[in-house]
Every structure is written in structure tokens, then in C-alpha cells.
Length: 335
Image 1 (cartoon, rainbow, N blue to C red):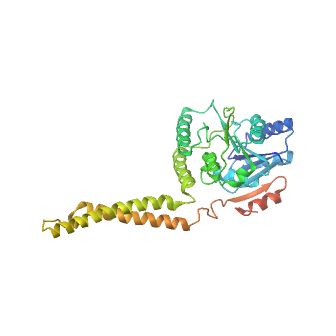
Image 2 (image 1 turned 135 degrees about the vertical axis):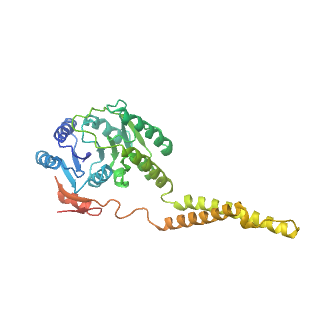
Image 3 (image 1 turned 60 degrees about the vertical axis):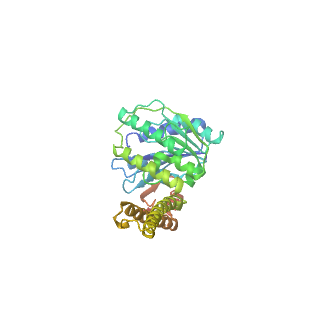
């Protein structure tokens, strides 16, 4: 199979028929072998009913339904688990991403040998309250990640080699930083393509103001995990050692000064009356705690077995049995 299209969705029943028809037309025109994986992230509208109808009309459409809303990262990670195509394309379900971009994205992965290609919506139709914070986050992410050639890390329209999506884990709200996760995993050839951004045709955006706060915290988290996730002692141990050495050096200086004054009959203050004594003591305690934290972090596995444990209510569409088998290791299927 050449292409897997992964579409996370939440309450997008109006746009799904048009999106499926658009994708099918593009695939047929270019004679691609493909699958469309629609991951319903706990919608409470008629999205799942629409997906059921689409799977009857088009055998290339597959659906996965969460029992409740887990978020876009969970939906993408589940889609990645199911995907079988040589190239995996992700796009949003709101028709703001154009399926007409798929052939060129596919070509860049197959012929130009990119590991990942991220879309860049150079011209956006979003309100300024969304575009300005997005530009700020992208600038900070470029600086912290070292991926300087990407303008839009959070664009939903991306293309991946299959090995990439099978090698990374997207959890929490880390979907904003998939290129960063891929880089830390060792996939260094990351490219960008200017893509068309369509105005939203149906419904309203599903992301509120909290995404900006969460996005900043996620960026700090992924940066720390990427640099020190495999070697936490390098971070905590270094800080702890520096703090302890500083405190111990001050303590030795105070103790040496006290002994010097006693041996020369000069009047000397009680060490406990000197503020630097408490600063040194605090530094030594904090340093020891940081060192122990780093040691314990080395003993604890970063990959929790339950990090991507989702309740999948239903799975339909071609080869449902195989899909269930692919998912059963990481999530619970509710029959």
C-alpha cells in the first residue's frame, strides 16, 4: 500500500463526506493504493454514523472510535498504530487542509527521501488571536529544537515515512511538536512544503485559549525529555553536584576561618550566627536531593505502559480483525 491518510476528528459530521470524496478523487486520479483512517476522538454528534456510511461506500475507509475524548495526540498515535502505507499523511477533518497536496507530499517522501515533510500555511485564514501566538511558539520551538527550516510546527498536514510513525510516540498534547519528537528519535531529514490553507467551512474550532498555555508547557517537556530523557542523571546530577560543591566549599571556608581565628586568639563569630552558613547548608541539602533525584530517574523507565492506553469503542472498515490485533497491545477495545 502506498499511502495511509490519518484523520483525527471531533464533531466533524458535516465535513466528513466532502473530505472523503475529495481524498478519493485525488487518489483515483493518481492511481494510488491507499487507506483513509478516520479516528473519532469521542464525538457526540453524528460523526461515527457518517463514518459507518463511508466505510460501506468506500472499502478504503477505516474507522476507529474512542469511548470518550482523549485529544488529538491520542487520535494521531492510534492512527499511526493502524497505518500500513509506505507514506503516512495526516490532515485535519475540517477541510482546512487540502487533499490536493497529497501527491507532492508523497513525492517528497519517496523521491526526495525526506523522513518527514511538514506543511506551512504561509497564508492563513485564522483570526489574529490564533496567528500571533502561533508565530511566537514557532519561533521559540525553532530556537529550542534546532529545526530552523520549519515555519509551522503545528500544521496538521504532514507526510511521514512509515518507519517514522512506527518509531515515535505521541501523547498528552505533543502533536504540536511531532517534528521535534521525530528529530530526537533520530530522523533528521525534515522538510517543509508551502500548502494551501482553506477557510473553515463548517462548525467552529475545537481548541480554546488553554492550548497556548499547554503548548508552552509541552514545549518545555519535549525539550527536556529529548535532551535528558535517556540520561536524567546528566541534568539532575550536574545541578546537584554543582550545588553541593558550592555549599561544601563555603562550609569549608567558614570552618577554616573559624579555626584560624581560634588559633590566633582573634575574636570570631559563632558559625551558626553567620548567614553564609545557612546558605551553604541549604545548597548542600538541595544538591544532595537533586543528585538522588537523578539517580532515581535513571532507575525509572520513561516509557509508561499506560501512557497510550485508550478505550477504543469500535473498529470498522477493511481488515477490522487485523486493526484490532494491532491496537490490542496498547489499548483496550470495548466490544
